[in-house]
Image 1 (cartoon, rainbow, N blue to C red):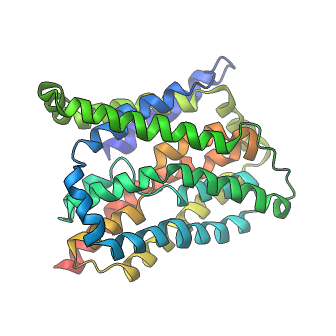
Image 2 (cartoon, rainbow, N blue to C red; image 1 turned 90 degrees about the horizontal axis):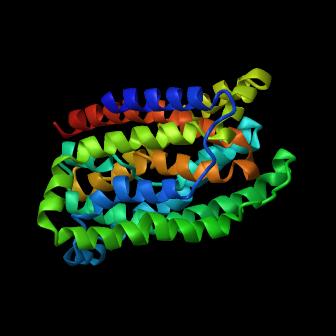
Length: 314
């Protein structure tokens, strides 16, 4: 629950800082910062020798890809179309195509799942970030008419996909390979990893909610307050459906499938928030709302899932 407190504090302070109109102007450096502080430390334990797991558990990996890039996005589209808002639907869809997250390895370890498989799945899903953005691009084009909105890709989502690959995958991975050989630095980062991730999360949230464009959230509350309730209901529906789908599909008696389960019921929310701020001009500021509520929903939901899993395995 400490992380939830950090999330709420960072968001509130960020909104307060930018409230008077002197908020931050977006810089892609925040993506690099997120990549180096949140993603890079998780890659230390990704070993080239673990590639054999891809072939050994190829059926499980294919099953995870189908769920995370076909079934969950389909669920998100179904829920999103009922919201009546283009941005809210896009935010929910973005959540659906970003698997795992900063705490996914914590839940994998806590449930005594296969951590090697967890790291392989984490790396595979990071490799698919560009695909996730291209899927968002396709979602925008195909659903714009339904919502009666123009799809104007001002920032070029396809180019963002390429930048995300460099800043969030290539640079963090190369950096992790270098730090592995600097043992004192690696040891320091691993020992202080929880503190680094918490401080990083706070700074990223403070910055993103302090952006000038994020202040339009107040206008949404003034003119369309119902979108806040709609977004919360949509996020709850998505996580609930994802939970039952995952429970039905995965064999939780298997440590490897338990790892895949956590990569399905948790979403990479911080990454989603970073990417959503890049597309507010395309989908509207309301794209941030589902992601904002996902922070509030996912942590208690993960605690509940862990509790239920303990009961199922006992």
